[in-house]
Every structure is written in C-alpha cells, then in structure tokens.
Image (cartoon, rainbow, N blue to C red):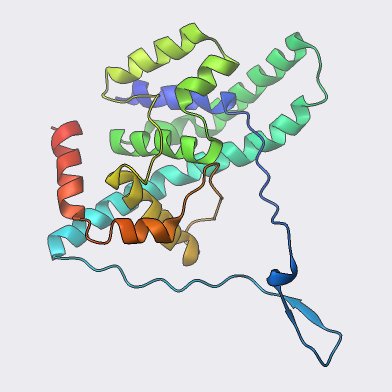
Length: 232
C-alpha cells in the first residue's frame, strides 16, 4: 500500500503548470462612498446554509470523508503553489539538459520534503489527491507524467497504481460524480470558514448550481457504495 502512495510523490515534480491566482479588480469589487474620496475594496462574503443530514449515520459518513479531503487537499495545494514558482524559474532555461537537471533537483527536494507524509496517506486519501491534482491543474496525473516524463513511465506508474485499485487517469468531475460533489462541498465550506486555504480550480465549477443539482443527494448511500467497491 505504501509503495502505491509513494508513486504520488514522484508525480508531484511533473505537475508544472502555471496558475494565475491574481484576481483582476473591477468597479464591482469596490464600495464607493459618494460624498467622500475614500474607496474601500470589499471581499465577497458568502453565507452557507448548514448542511442537513438525514441521520446520525449519514453525518458520521460525511465527516469521515471530510477528514480524508482535509488530509489530501494540502498536498495538492502545496504541489501546485510550489511548482508555479518552479515553472517561473524554468522559463529562463532554454537547454533541455539543464531543464531536466532542474526538474530532477526539484524531485529530490519534494521527495525529501514530503515522502514520510505521503506514505501515511490511505488509499481513500490517495484517490482524493489524484482527483484534486486534476482540479488544481486541469490535467490528470497520467497526462502530466506522460508529458513531462514519458509515455512508458505514465503507463508503468498507472499499472502499479491499478494493483492498489487506484487510477492516475481519474478526472475530477463534480457535475457527473456525486462523490466528487461531496469533495467540492467539503472544500467550499472549508474555504468559507478558513479551515482550508482557498485555491481556484483550473476548470469551471459552479458550486451553487451543483447544490441545486444534488439537493436530494443521499450521502450515506454514496459513501457506503464507495466503501463496498473499493475498501472490501
């Protein structure tokens, strides 16, 4: 099991996609006091309804998955943030050999920094992390390995992951997969109460539309089906 999760470690250095988190400000972002010269930038404030559970059992299942998301998300955030900075460093390197050496140095750094922590991830946390890397980069882990390492390495890593019922080709799709919506729901609520640091996804996600779509979601059913499929 630990070997399969170490694969995630070696994948981190190939996630080399720049992300621009700087929000462009417009007039809608300011409150203008008409009788004064003061202009105050305001942050958007969103009030979430308290999540309703049909039973205590469903609530326990939700918060079990909640803990898994909280364990996996920081790795996806750290990876994307760190590698954005690295990408900027690579922009000035024209030599393929030097770029390859730079990436290798990065890999060794990431390995030393996160190896022990990644080994402690469970299969569920590893599966969520694979999904969240896609959320943050717009590319699956398989695609990233193929592009930045080789098609053979992508095939080998994925074949090894499959032995542990993981797939590096998995995409994050909350509009189609109920479990992914549960992940997004956990993320949005955690961003809102500042228990997780917000990062915008590389794909368009309308969370409030998803709330309407999954208004009657049976969380207990979705998570128990997941457990029956992957954990037994």
